[in-house]
Image (cartoon, rainbow, N blue to C red):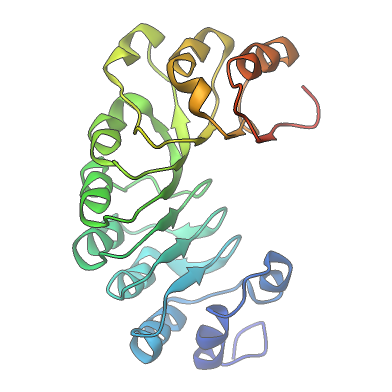
Length: 230
C-alpha cells in the first residue's frame, strides 16, 4: 500500500483514467511497479498515459510503457529518477501510432537526440512534442524529419543566433514554446513567426517591448502564454 491508500495494482490501473491534473495531485506518487503492472495488464487497451507533476518512478518504469502502442505519453513537470535514456529508444522502435510526446520541464537529460529523431521518423502521426530545454542546433535532424509536427516546446537558443541559419523548422509547425530566449535571439523565430497560432513564452527572458516586437510578427496568433509580470 502506498501513501495514497491504494495498492500498486489498483493505482496503476486508475492512473490511465485520470485526466484532470487536480485529480492527479491526490495520486501523484507512482512506482515503477505500477507502470509495469499497467503495461502488462492493459497494454493493448492503453492509449494514453498522463503523469503530470508525478514522482516516485524511474526511467526503468518507462521502459515498460515504451513497449505498448500508446498514442499519448505525458510526463510534464514530473520528477523522475533518471537511470538512462533507453526508455525513449524503446518508444522509437516499438510505437508507431504515438501522436503526443511530452517530457517538458522534467529532469530527463540523458535522452539522445538520435532517439528523438528516430521516434519522429517511426511515429508517422507525431504532431506534438514537448521536451526538456534543448538547443535548436542539436535538433536539426529532428526538425528535418518531423514533417507532420504541429507543436513543439523546449526550443532554446544557446549559441550565437547567426549559427541558427542551419535550422529549418517543420512546415506544419504552428505552436511553439521557447525557453530562455533573449531579445537578441528573437530573429531566429522571425522567419516562421507568421505561421504561429500558439506561442508559449512562460520561460522566455523577454521584457514587455520584446513581447510586443515578437507578437507583431505573428498576425495569425490565437493563443499566448506569458509570465504575469513582464
